[in-house]
Amino acid sequence: MMNEQFKEINKIRGRYIAHEQTDVEKLRELDKEVSLPAQIFAYIFGTVAALVLGAGMCFAMGVIEGSMILGIIIGVLGIGLVCINYPMYKAILSSRRNKYSERIITLSDEILNNK
Image 1 (cartoon, helix red, strand yellow):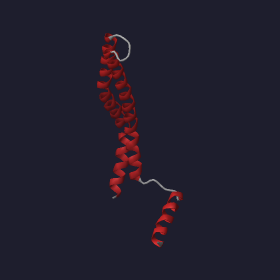
Image 2 (cartoon, rainbow, N blue to C red; image 1 turned 90 degrees about the vertical axis):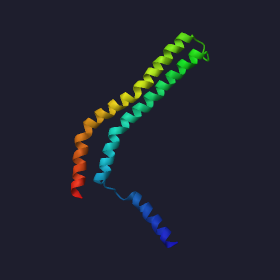
Image 3 (cartoon, rainbow, N blue to C red; image 1 turned 60 degrees about the vertical axis):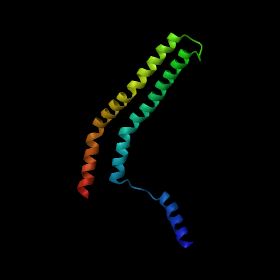
Image 4 (cartoon, rainbow, N blue to C red; image 1 turned 30 degrees about the vertical axis):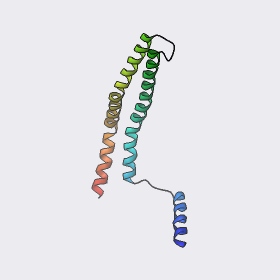
């Protein structure tokens, strides 16, 4: 019983002690900073593209009142947007990697040389 209370006390205490970031945590944070915007863009753009494709399918099949030709045009546009999503994600990720590469390599070299 005493051991469980000791663990709980240390856990609560740990929330209030100032925590200094280690170099590895800084490196992880930089890596996340590189990839997160590209991922967010890909999710949002992919969702919108899929919705456009779905709307085109609804028009083409007559679920939504409209013409089949309009549905085909909107559907092809949606297919095009879905197809360019991954290349756009890779381009954004590549440009961010180029932007942050020097900082990440410098920090990783410092970590590796300290070991």
